[in-house]
Image (cartoon, rainbow, N blue to C red; front, side, top):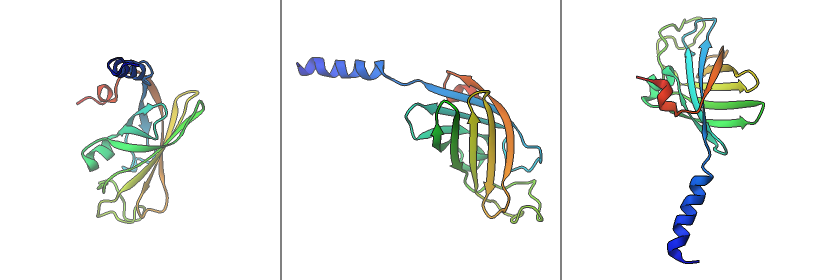
Length: 152
């Protein structure tokens, strides 16, 4: 095959098989009002990728950017993600409940979305705190890019 035809054919094939991203915008409720969990999570999955882009106000405030989450599971039943923040100062932390109430702690988040009803559970594991915190909520699916959903 002629090289001048090969490159356009490869580009057309790649563009024709490009995988669409699925974006989820989730509202969360932390019943304990712990301060370790965001009230909003937006994430974007691309089929076959091992990481997802995520946005939540806590991670964004600690990192100054969106986080890359490890995709642990992505099938027809559920999606499971994990990511970490940089050290975050929780103004609602209590000395008796949260070991380091005076300092900033990194948080590891674990999110599980059940695809059937788009219900989500988000768990927060602040470093050095014995018990995880959790929030539940619901997500809406969008075909638009993540940036459109997070707004200013």
